[in-house]
Length: 503
Image (cartoon, rainbow, N blue to C red; front, side, top):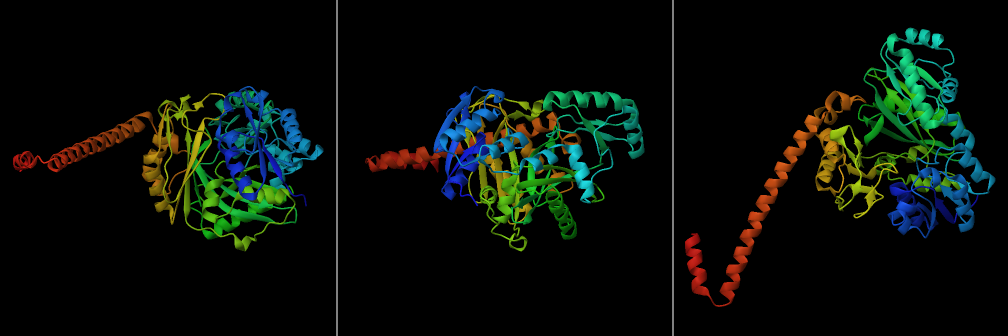
């Protein structure tokens, strides 16, 4: 076992700040790295030390392994926490840390590599008896053979990048006529996004739900699950709203999926925190989608329903210690919802909306958690992910958590750019969501610019009415105070005259 004393956080924004906070609670020193536009970012100011690593472009700063390793060595950091995104699922980075004698707070290089390649991961899951959708086990090599496989499993089919994620290099093909063009488009996007144009195909599921299981494993043979999350509210195959636990899982199905998740992790000798993602069809059959070999963006909802600090567990495992809990110790209570507050315009196909945050007033109160990496006065640029914050609410049950979220969204004030707050309100008020009867097609099925415009108009009317009533009340209070002051100054006769007129 190796005690960690100082941790370099190889990331930025809310996840860097979130990691730094847990490090402080554990008594670990922290080193932040930052690019030029992040010089005054909260994670830089909160860390014990901070080091500039380059210009705005992540390819010249946050993604440069040599720079980050050198900063860690110069600062005397024992370990590196990669957060999520950037280098978090880079097997070469994990291996380089090993070679330099720096602890990588994440899985071993082999596990990252195996689960990062979607086709190789499918083969491993097949051997571990973890179900996955019908399709090819390997990347496509022969277009004619691929067409035959697509015909056999039936259209629609999904073309997916072997080295991809986040919806990149993915195309839905509805018929044979679209097959070759779909393959071409997916390969082109995969090449541009990942430098790897390998793709594979699988059956496109009707009415799929995106359900994932959080797992944590140590080097002593303990692999535990930390229950499930639902992540089906998505735009461009990327999540916007998550909740824990998933509302459609029976105890039996939850147990079966949890067992499959643990089997998937054990199949690659996984150590650390990770997530096994599944698709659940309309008949409640579940299929392996992928494994994220890192901390998930949506991990706070899991922390809220279990009381665990997943970052603290990551660090403990990285030190070679045994997990301090057993599977029976991990219990879930209540319900949690997360809304990702992006600087995006839901009225314009969720395109990024940049600008300076002239106002950023976060909600508070019982059961509200806000993980944010920006402050009022900062600029939201096009250089990085447009997330402003993750807003989470916890309630005794699902309805309670949703109502708290709606209250929190009403309190949230952001000016300077458009955000996904109106979209989140729309979803949480929609009958399909409140009933729990929704899937990954929510946006194309139920959402439109006209509907969000109508909601924004209604919200504006309510706010205008509230402001008018408040103004009237303030005016009345001022008049009462004036009359009171007159009375105290001895102008009793004038005060009585005014009061008589009012009556």
